[in-house]
Length: 325
Image (cartoon, rainbow, N blue to C red; front, top):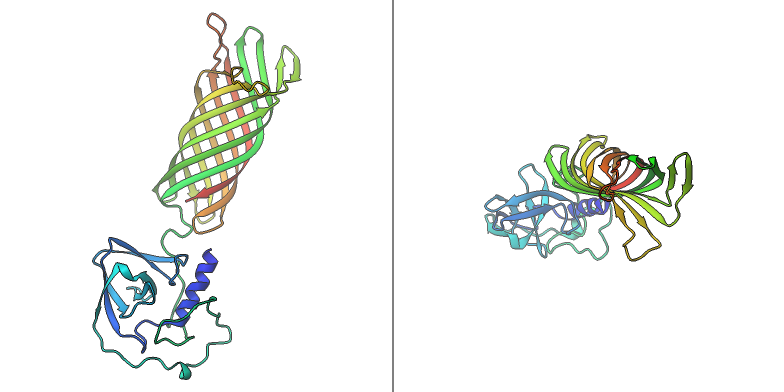
């Protein structure tokens, strides 16, 4: 989408020039509380800057459909919704551009998009303003505002209970990891968030008293909720994240759909650490990979009067993530 927006911006800039001989110069006053200046008259075009009520800047005296061309203080040109502006014409009209005498565009110029028609008084093709350089708008591929990270991965999880009637008891095996983190940027490249994460072993291997075996139709999961922070190293987009968790171990018989066979520990304390790398896939979305380690400990939710063992759990995983920021 960013590439399409850039192409449209170059094409549109090639078709019109602010205050050219086909339009009178005017002054625009922003009457909306906030409006967006885009590089072309399309909602998908890149955002150049945001204007606020009362700001003044040069503009064409005639709209281009629902848009109006304005000139920013730094010399760039952009398009604004005409309904967000109040226009005062301060220059007399001049003769319209004669399309027949307009020199042809360079051989390398991009054609306009299908169905594009220039505003009245402008030549079908033209040249971009002198010194025109595309500049991405605020927020383009930067860590700011709302933060959402989704992850899915696989790894290994080990769950050990000590202090029960039978001594040490273990559940372990290959596991899947799911998680979501939602928060926001509080300082450049520094993010705080709330997180929900889950590591699950299907058909775990159980070990007790020197004997081991697979438990079919059972799952053992660590379910955790907490808060954490992440920091990105720019421009490499490498990040480090740590989350303090309230964690619980849940063992479930998947062959029983009633849910009555679900057994859970008490809630304990946990920690999740991530080291990852992301690549920008669009203006605000990044795709990445990360290494995960999760540690937690909690008391078993055993029956009253019986020894209450302590579970110690560690999990390692390789995650694939999609992040909006």
